Length: 327
Image (cartoon, rainbow, N blue to C red; front, side, top):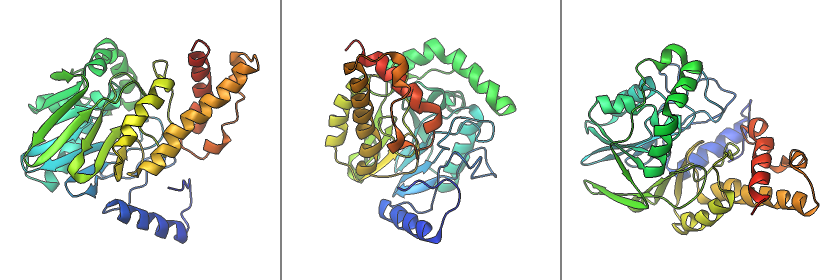
């Protein structure tokens, strides 16, 4: 999907509308870091939109978490079944989780029965405190839960720093259940698979696959509208290996961790292809006997149109250099 930062010419609007119809999205939802808040009536950054029948997502901002976007800079998705609702991501705070719950209640009388944390980051887990208070079970990968257990208080402190009064009610609340590998859940007539594809963006990354709907809520396995971040713990070589199993599902609909719903072609271009590109450029620096400082000058201009490019590109190159230096 073409990235436009400010003005939306009529031709672009028509094109994007056609794309969203193909993807099954009932309402246009643009995620853009230059727009502080797309849904002023709520602390949510945007109102949930239907992706396919029974699957909705509140698309977060594609920039860093701020007071203006209330920390809603990831996608908060949910699946409505004949036997309850499954929510993907607790949200970045108690108030965000509460706001999402209010939106769910306008769409169905089914109760929320399960919350899935896609990883151990704050915007996946800090809102657990709200859901736990509602008596909802929470599940995450064992590695994600362990990371949040160790770093949760620091993550909470950072969220309180930018979110101020919007952080009210938020405490560190760990998942009730953890798993490794794959876990199959059946809710009514809906089969839901929680899948760990292997090393990727962060420890404990999982995706939520709905085979009957030909859709995957990929979490941070896949990016397309913002530049993916490489963390200290990110394994880019492992991510590329894990990608093969992810791609083998060959789904039609992808709800990424950040950005609007899309397809496999787009997330492949901006996840797998970017990792291959960056690793290739770093290898060129290493082969030439270059040092860490030389990685900052790597040309990443083919991806400069993506949100968070300015914040992440040089940092990504540095971290990939450190990773590959001893491979």
